[in-house]
Length: 200
Image 1 (cartoon, rainbow, N blue to C red):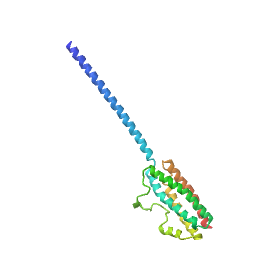
Image 2: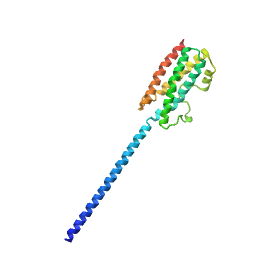
Image 3: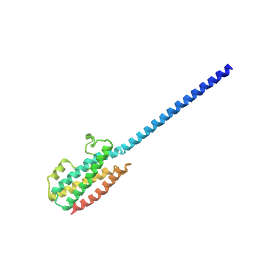
Image 4: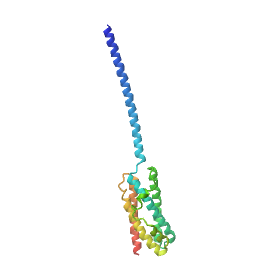
């Protein structure tokens, strides 16, 4: 009889221990699932907030000052150009590129990236950028002389922009890819127009 009682007590103890262990495992598993779910959510949030690739970011950091110089040159044309077609083209370039600058700045803000590249990298990667002497020549010229300098400078400038835009036309980010394509399409057409104006 005593033996049966001992066995019964032992069985109860084992059963209670098993139940306790099962509860502990279940709670732990639940916590792990909860933690895993939170980690997944955080991971998804991270992907969402850094949706622009490193190449997209580099493109924006390079293209913003490149576009800004085109806008500055366009501003010079307002008071210095004599050919109405040159003035109209300069206004078109400003109208296209100013909003694109704002768009690319919004990418950098969304990615918490600096608005400018590391100065150690310099402007070497930005094809078509005018140097200080070329900008001075534009600033100090007027009429037909300005028109010629403007067209020559802007053709080179556009060609540089097209090369840079090729960086992002295959981007996984739809907005970056669309902007790259828009720059290539628009500036290719403008180069054709400028070459025809130069040939006149």
